[in-house]
Image (cartoon, rainbow over the protein chains, first blue to last red):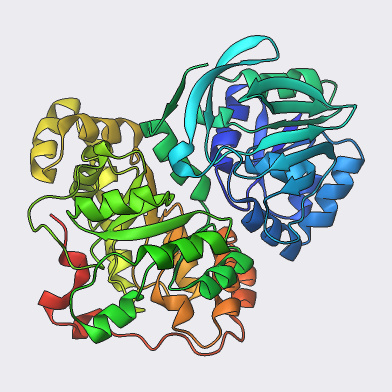
Length: 190
Length: 295
């Protein structure tokens, strides 16, 4: 399996490194041809508005939406969660997303940078240390969405079919549990 | 669940999220909107861009909290603000406004010609300028969570930013080539703490994100800095002192992502109208060069 990491802006290098640490070939994706060459996609942390603008300008927007519809496994962390959400609260006016994940996400829900924090939490039954930076949370979930982690009484890790999203940044810690879950539970057979 | 805020990891992690992006100087809410719309990953709120500070002279200080709050209300992307070197009370005030990052900046008039701010005392992260590796490591030792090469702000002349990026890169490469028992003297020569020098020698990079700043005015300048190893770009006067700010801002964002693709860069460079006029750094008398502020 070849893992693609959307490399328009943000901490994509850390996701490439985490994927490689899990033993997978990983590559940066900036254009449609590169998207066509990968079996799964990671949307990194960064600024969601910046990433969407660049994706639209370089014709990646529709291609990524199509891949999501066709069932490509996609994992988004932080900004990546916003990009996967069907509905966004507190975004810029008319903020777009690739969508696919039947959730409502609140951008910067935990507050500004002074409120950014790290904390232990449970992910799918196992304990891990999570880093939240100007993080979103999930406000409402659809019937098919499974909650894998909760913080401040809101879902912060969710899965729906082949889509996985976390409010926090496992790529900033040495703990590979979330990446392994994505590769082993969602990407299997690819 | 025990939560910790203001840790080195969340401060440095915030800078990780800005990577591959452009941080733009803005002086009002309208400019901040233009920057956000163009794809800026953050804005720097200040009263006068460096080119105007240079032209008008006088003492340059932190911005009016009213002005900063208007910009915070106008955009969803992170908002940064500048304080004078060593002016820890300006930093306390800016922190109380819940700004996302503080720039302890040589662009403003220094408040202390000996000491920088003890940045560990703050929950909010700081970015500081550096012209060489020793200066970068001294700032990190004081708690800076992000470094930017200084360049020469407000000139539109990229040569100093280039020199600073080359210097920092060359000094890191040199450390990586030294024997372990030579790092003590290297630390002495760099006037930097041994532990940080050893860390850089081992990892071959700074322990925090390295952006570049000072004199960047075109998409080609932004891409040049990215090819020199910058993690991202600050553009100060270059955007809103040009003929068509919205278009130039969007072009610089594209160039920072596709910095290795000459075709995209050529496309981004077309029809941008007038660039900021600019001043050659060589024509600025030495006492007025901002990059030399910092110790």
